[in-house]
Amino acid sequence: MATQQTRMLGKIAVAPSVIVLFMWMIVPLVMTIYFSFLRYNLIQPNAACSLMTPGVMFDEASRCIAGFGNYKFFLTDPEFFKAALNSLAIVGSVLLISIVGGTLLALLLDQAIYGQGIVRILIIAPFFVMPTVSALVWKNMFMNPVSGLLAWVQKSLGFAPLDWFAHAPLTAVIIIVAWQWLPFATLIILTSLQSLDEEQKEASQMDGATPWAYFAYIIVPHLLRPVTVVVLIETIFLLNVFAEIYVTGTGGPAGNMPFLVYQYGMIKSNIGGASAGAIIAVILANIVAFFLMRMIGKNLEN
Amino acid sequence: MARAVSTRRRVFMSVLAWSVALLIFFPILWTILTSFKTEGEAIALPPKFLFFDWTLENYAIVQERSDYFTFAMNSVIIAVGSTALAMLFAIPAAWSLAFAPGKRAKDLLMWMLSTKMMPPVGALIPLFLIFRDLSLLDTHLGIVIVAMLINLPIIIWMLYTYFKEIPGEILEAARMDGASIGKELLFVLAPMAIPGIASTVLLNVILAWNEAFWTLALTTKDAAPLTQFIASYSAPEGLFWAKLSAASTMAIAPILILGWFAQKQLVRGLTFGAVK
Image (cartoon, rainbow over all chains, first blue to last red; front, side):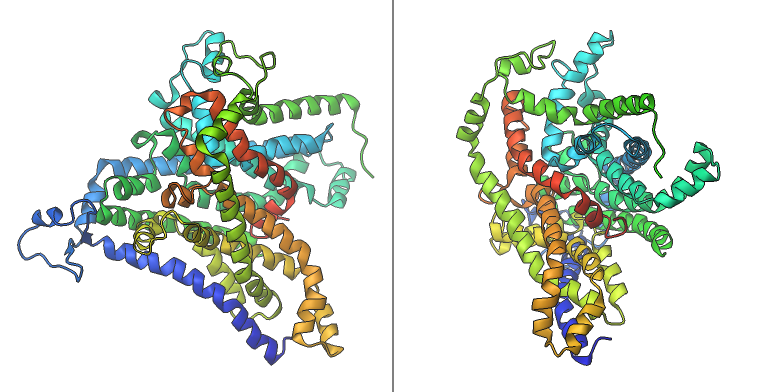
């Protein structure tokens, strides 16, 4: 049992981490909320206010208070609806691809095969490629409509080459992101499969379980936990996909929520609008997180 | 007793697995191959797979033109600096949560996990303005602090799962023998904790190396790491595939090698200890 002394020391030891994480979470958020109620533009700080009706209020830095104006503006921007849908499409499609594909791949790698170690290394590799590299390599060397490798394959098969980023930018982004996250799902599910009790395998074989029954009653329940974890982790990262959209220059057509907020703030210098957008993004992410955490909580309890 | 697998089945499965693996790995292989081609050969159709004039000139040109080493050095500073800083915070925290847990230890851990749920864009605008006012934009200090904060929850969790595996009885035995807390930490706990700490360091270096939201938003030149270096190839140099490939190969090679060593730790770290 921990003594009085260690317990005291324990509190002191954990405090710095709790404090910095709390500040990291709360300070920017409070500032973002505050900015979201201001008419605040970095390029034309004063011009923005003249648009306001008389009777406008100012804060100490003489920035005018916009009330819910920014929210109204952001929510009625057609780009918002598109960005929210794109966010969902990216998360949904990549999750589907990585879980279905990852399970199949993991089952394949779990078989007796020659050179399993090398196969595993080859498959996990894309996960270690930095997002800006994978985005540019795919965009140019694979998806270029003239000399890209995919165009060449399509032409060789007698199809017209597809100009990915002109005609299917969202699909292109999804392919790039899925290429990075499929290996992750595979690795997690494979690790879990390999921890499956050898005795359980043998017992089921001795009982004469068919391969199908073995899959349905032993493997599937066993995989519930790793798949849950994959869903949780990937959702966190996939909601925040940014580099792949930023460096491919896909912009609007495939832009998700983070990209739209970035555009508002960094390109249009509309701090108020960007902050309102960020708060909306946070709320949407928290709705997703709420359901996720409940699901995870149930699955990880044991 | 392991069941003997028929050779035919084994060959079939192997061929299938190798085909899929090569397909998934192909973009990386293709990037590496292209980096040794001339620009003309890089866009040649039909594509040249192995029979081209192998050349190193792209590597020379890339280094000459964009100062690869400055960017690489910045990546190293960010990855190593943020990891070292994070460890200063995380090791005491994980020790506390594992060995001297208060009543709310579990809640604290879940809360730390939940901070990862916060989308970075929620903090982008204020952080950009704070950094601008404190002159932290495009500085090593600024980006190291941010890289440390975004990975801190993962690091604490990962260390916690490792520390949890160290039997508490050993510590108690040491205490019974009259060891002070300082001695207990230094001579009993530290030797057993080192492998876990090493794995955590490795994972965090990888995560920080590849981080591409904050590095793109908060650095431009002086503190810009390789993520930014590659992004600068998006246009118009992106059209020069051989050079893009050489730059890409240099940017991903160190982490591919580290990553292959870190596979197992990666699973534990990124799943918050739920899958080992």
